[in-house]
Length: 198
Image (tube, rainbow, N blue to C red):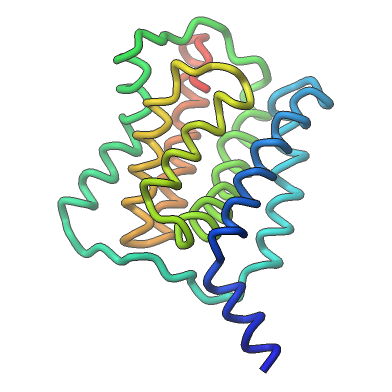
């Protein structure tokens, strides 16, 4: 009986667990960035640890979300995932101006690989199933400026998070692939143009 209760808790995260994840990610990232001093170094250290914890909570079975079979939801999800962030920044006239702070290789590993995969383990598997798409997208959008103070990115991050959430309604694996692809593209574009996209 106890095994079944633990299994159900791991498979269906509670609202309280989801809010704990949001708090841990937000406060952990704020602290890591101040302690480590470099963005990619801080993200690698924090998200590697969070990934281990999130993996230990997984049951090996997909966490249920509201499944969407609508082609419109898929198209909108892809569109927002790959253009929502840029659209939001454009709406608020938030243009990238600084050069990427670390090497291409380090940013590809951290921002392009580890971070999006672990974010899908947390936001996609532990938060969205508990609180839904809208609340997850809002928390994802607010988390970033709470960490770095760049509030002009909030709308773009909300649109990006909504796109990923819609894709998760079809397939969490598809959302993970899209998340990695979008982040890798942003890293490459930032280094090609000399303007950081994050």
